[in-house]
Amino acid sequence: MPVERFDFPSTEGHRLAARLDLPTEPVRAYALFAHCFTCGKDIHVAARIAAALAQRGIATVRFDFTGLGGSGGDFANTDFSSNTDDLKAALAHMRETGRPASLLIGHSFGGAAVLAVAGSAPEVRAVAVIAAPYDTAHIVDHFRDEVSEIERAGEAAVNLAGRPFTIRRGFLDDVRAQDQKQRIHDLGRPLLVLHSPVDQVVGVDNAREIFTAARHPKSYVSLDDADHLLTRPADAEYAAALIAQWAARYLPDAGAAPTVDPGEPGLVVVEETGQGPLQQRVTAGSHRLRADEPVAVGGGDTGPGPYDFLLSALGACTSMTLRLYAERKKLSLERVRVALRHRRIHIEDCVGCDGKDMKLEVIDREITLTGDLDAPTRARLMEIADKCPVHRTLTSKIEIRTVERTA
Image (tube, rainbow, N blue to C red; front, top):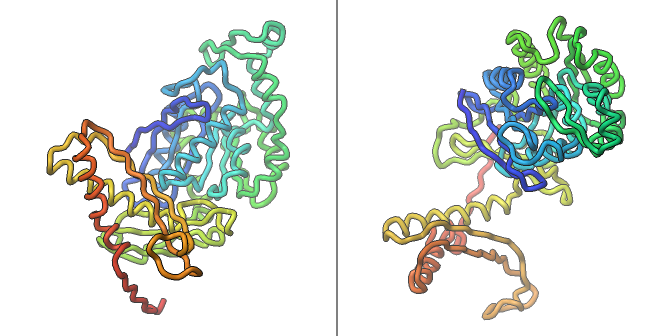
């Protein structure tokens, strides 16, 4: 399966290492996977579930929490709240890159983190947890012999899964302060709970308590004789198949047959998804995007708004035009950055405009040119910016011809 490796910033400014497992077919939806305590994105259960979901058209992002795997930061400074902050940063990055997570999956302690953040992510349509603890303080049982030393000295080295980690008193205080029961009750998302009745790390009673606290729609599936880490490939593949099948009815793109040849160039199709009051599915050639409006104006804020796309088109065209010109003229232009805003002003604020009661549409465009460029060259590049095709389209007389097509 195709894989993209990338990183994104945590709320504390650390770089978090991530990967995206992509299907070979068109992406139906995106999922975000949260791994277990002290594990990493490349643990077998995460890799196998991501691969199995990709085979079913669901692209899955998995990343290392702060201080683990390839991510920066110090694990000793982390706690449950920092893990949830990392998850929120991952969700934000997926939204900003046009890949909003419709499905959240969490394994073990990652499952507890997923339950804590899903309710605040409007783009999330369904949640699945595997071998998750009901109470976040459950994690303390794994180093109970060192708890008194942590509370006395402020920190202590503990052995977890054969590796040494430093746990601080703040971690204990944080996990003990979480109100997971209320979060699960207020989840507001379809929930799938998967747990093995012979799990020796997180007992199956945790699944019962999660299921009892949650409101419908909710489902429970026993993983029979699987161990906590689903180390047998068949167990992980079984869990992934269940998640994919269960989530299909909730994912916004599931079962939606394309209404246009996805390879047809130059054609953009916009359709309502039925998820939220204003969410739209945008198909541009072989690319699929999502549009929405902010919550403040009645949308779900699951994608850029119409004017965001308009500004994006102008900004992309401006940057590309400058790059092509610089390459042709062999200029030392290292990087182009275009920042745009849209606003309306009264005509009376416009020098040379007639009328006082009308309003004028204004796009403010700020262009930053990085490189060894003299003043005349910079001035010429600014002139070229106004020659980009989208700029010319927006500043010319446009005729929009609208016809009705029978569904």
